[in-house]
Amino acid sequence: MLLPETKRILLKLSGEVLMGDQQFGIDTDFVSKLAEEVKAAKETGLEICLVIGGGNIFRGMAGAAKGMDRAQADYMGMLATVMNALAMQSALEKLGVETRVQSAIQMDQVCEPVIRRRAERHLEKGRVVIFAAGVGAPYFTTDSGAALRAAEMRCDALFKGTSVDGVYDADPKKVASATRYDHIDYDTVLAENLKVMDASAVALCRDNAIPIVVFSIRERGNLARVLAGEGTQTIVGTGPNPA
Ligand code: UDP
Image 1: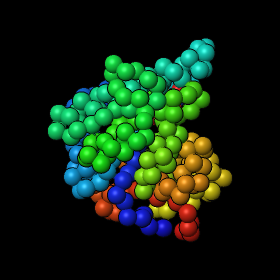
Image 2: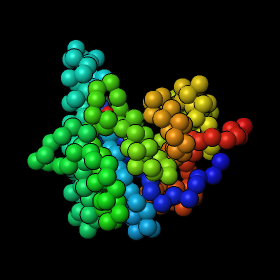
Image 3: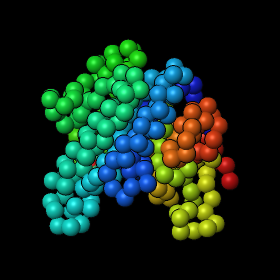
C-alpha cells in the first residue's frame, strides 16, 4: 500500500501538540517549530491545507462530563480551534508563509468564512489555508473536519500529526508488546475500533479513497521524512493488511 503522488495534502495536527511540554494551552515556541516544519513541507512544492484541533484548550466531552450542555461545550471546543488556528497563522506569517484562516463558524473580524473556491485560489497562490472550527457543528471532532476538508479540497492524502508514531494493535502506553502497523485498511480500523481518528472521519476518508498517514509530529523533521516516504508512520488505506 503505497501513497499516491501527493501534490496537495491536508495536515491535521491535534491540539495537544501545540502544548509542547506544557500541560495546557499554547506553547508559542513549539508552535514556531511546527510552523518551520510546515514551511519546509511547502517549500517542496506541496499545497497545504491545515486543520488544528482544540484539545489543548477545551474539549466538549470534558465540559459535558462536568455537567455542561454538550452542544454548548462543543461550540466552546470549536472556538478553541480558532485560537489555535490564529496562533499557527501568526507563526507561519512570521516565517514569511502567507496563510489564510477559514472558519466554519463565521467571525468576520478575525478570519474568512469557509468558501471552497476562495480556498482553492489561496492554494493556487501558494498560501497555506487553515480550516478552523471543524465542521462547524457540535457532536463532531476536528478529525471529521479534517476528513471533510480533505475531501472537498480534493487532497491526495490526510496526514495526521499526533503524539504517537502510528497506529498500534493496543495502546503502546499501556501494553508493552503493542505493535505498530505499517499499513492497515480502513475496514480493519473500523471493525477493531483502533484509535486513529473517529469512525465518521475514517469512513469519510474510505468513501473518498483518501489515504490517512498517522505519524508523530513531535520529532523534529519528521513531517519531511514522512512526506518523503521515510520515517515511521502508519498508512491507512485500501489494500492488503500485512500480518
Ligand atoms: N468540535 C465540535 N465540532 C467539530 C470540531 C470540534 O464540536 O466539528 C469541538 C469538540 O468539542 C471537540 C473540540 O471542538 O472536543 C476540540 O476538537 P478536537 O477534540 O477534535 O481536538 P483535538 O483532539 O484534535 O485536539
